[in-house]
Length: 96
Image 1 (cartoon, helix red, strand yellow):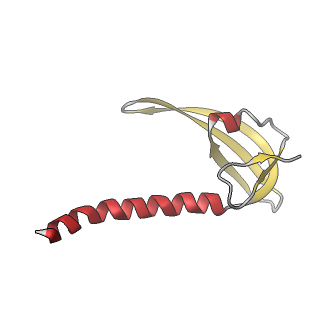
Image 2: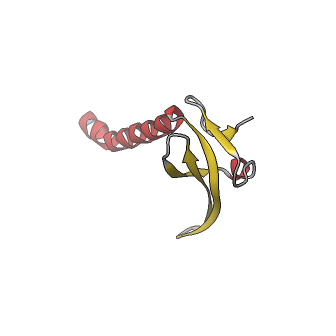
């Protein structure tokens, strides 16, 4: 009987493990660069609407990428601002 319990909980444990790895990867990342674009995208879900806040960044090493952030982090930045994300932190900050 306990084998069914273990097999039933295994998919949940795997999903939690994958999610923890994704969050850990985001926290471990680091970069410095410049905000080159800001965008707000409304997303339609089956349960309603969601708004995604995106910063497009040109890193000092030449990479260009889009970073989804919370609305309060998004409000800190304007196009042309220097941005820094240190390893071990969840969100980037404005460079001094």
